[in-house]
Image 1 (cartoon, rainbow, N blue to C red):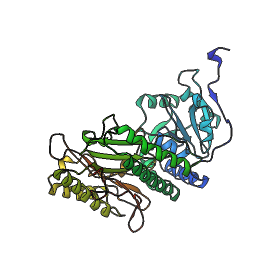
Image 2 (image 1 turned 90 degrees about the horizontal axis):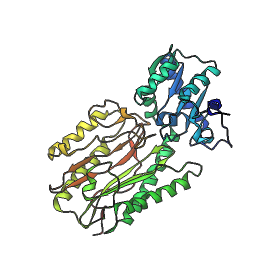
Image 3 (image 1 turned 90 degrees about the vertical axis):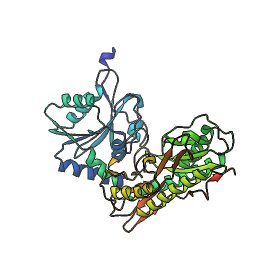
Image 4 (image 1 turned 135 degrees about the vertical axis):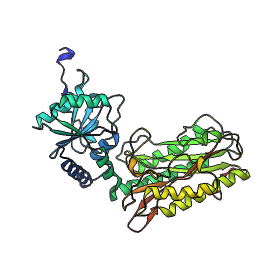
Length: 409
């Protein structure tokens, strides 16, 4: 048999279905809401291709490695489309069915999506796609495969659905916050003069991974990480650990990111190794002041923009607004440093979204003072809050501020 004769589509139901992160009722709730969006937009098929939406609506989190994946949703059915390289694992971890495309022909991915719909008697006239993440080249291939169909963006409507967390999601997020705290304590215990950043980071990562495995024994163990920075490396929020060794007087930045089945949580704290100088202490306390004020502001009925503009006034009073490096917080759920986030729920001046019960957001003010200036470094605190009917619950327990986080003195 030649390569040209090999099959293009496979169904690989290898083994038994795994226990998923969420109940069948929870997954059906999500899909029912998506199908309501599809009806409102008069979409016959939702062709979801992003990490975050494939995960949210199927519980399967793919690993791309340059290959495309999808979740196909009709009013009656849903199934993931995965690459042959992953064999039966996508089926085991999908809520619903799964079809597999092989490497043996060019553009098998698109061919299999079309063939699988045709085999189900579905010929879409309106096809829902994710314009915020879908590459233009792939969009053109979808259009060529379904020439009579209009391609309709469903990404923003799906994002709005994901903003409101269910009780099951909130339970996962609360465990994540607890596990992030454990990672933070492991990091603080590992801090010592001459220890490189990456070794401190490993201590936090190991502690979190082991606790995730204990708490969620049926889950994949993946993607948990730590950003730990010292000195000049604290200037950026997303600076990776290096081989730089901790020195006396260093400002330190502790950032823990436990990942449970694609659900991101975070703990971020400013620390100092030995006593900070006067200006550093002043800057740290100012940022803590903003952080405390932000925690008080988060409640139902306030808009993201209102929070940002109110906190800006504190920085303005100290002449530090130009030192602010990003927004004051963001939504939590299915997100990571290499896949999407709910951009409509970021605490920034240009976001008018009003906070509602069921939303989960961070408060994370940061200022950066350049090297060579008094108090140089990046100062950041980060707590996670679950919004309820009358207020918000802070689910982060690791203490913040100079009274708790000066180590090695």
